[in-house]
Image (cartoon, rainbow, N blue to C red; front, side, top):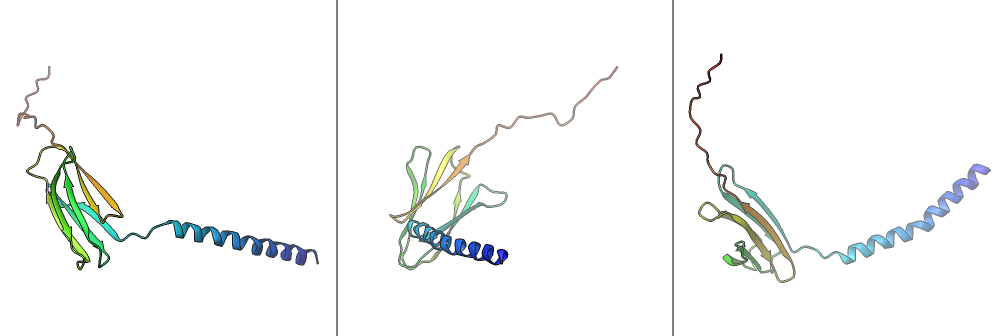
Length: 134
């Protein structure tokens, strides 16, 4: 009899807590805005090129910009409403060192990806070294 009462009490408590937990999840889902586009970016192997991949909903215009460290636009391109997938290579081999930004926007959402370009100084070392030991 005691076990039955304990089980009923636990079941009643869990049923009373269920609506509170369920309503919290609905509030979180309503506050989150769905993304209208997704962005992926990676470096092309053994090169100074970055590959940008964009997937978006049809009917949305998306603007892609390449900004220099001072915020000036180096390249600007509009992805049309009918195009759902987009890919582009950005070649950084001919530009100066610095932090460049690739900005993707559709008026409501803005996604920024940074590219940090640095060049290391080359130091010439002799091909052979002679070491004398006593």
